Length: 210
Image (tube, rainbow, N blue to C red; front, side, top):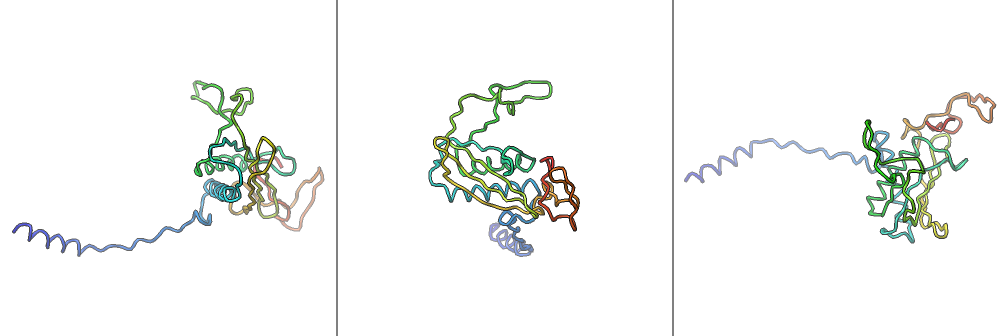
């Protein structure tokens, strides 16, 4: 008898509860809108790697690959904060696709100091020797008036063959913390040029010293 009383009472209580409709979250990771700067770089890296996976015709997931730092296409050796952060995002994205990513910046040994315990380094003399690397992911960046064109490819070390390639573009507004519109007065080869208005030259990438 007790069960017969409790069950209807419970149903009445539940029926009186007002269930608020759940508003679905905007799929910002699909188009990149509303993402903070660092998250936008990770979203950019995911787009690049997704295209590389589609174009891949040789690299297997068990073959070691190293992600190098993207460079400016003009000299092939200059880098900046955007390139360095993109490198980290590319490593994460490749790993999410279950590729065998090798971290080139691991030192031979752990450095224990009063400031902390460190294993990452950019000193080539402290890096591990004879890493079993078969492929490299390399990227070049080309600044234009409203953003950055990025070309990425996976190259085989055995014969320099490109086994996959990707082209993408990111606007200055999407990564405003890493790129700024050009000034009205710019310097080129030691000569100052005055433009009609700011933003008429290629964007200025923060950290490239220009």
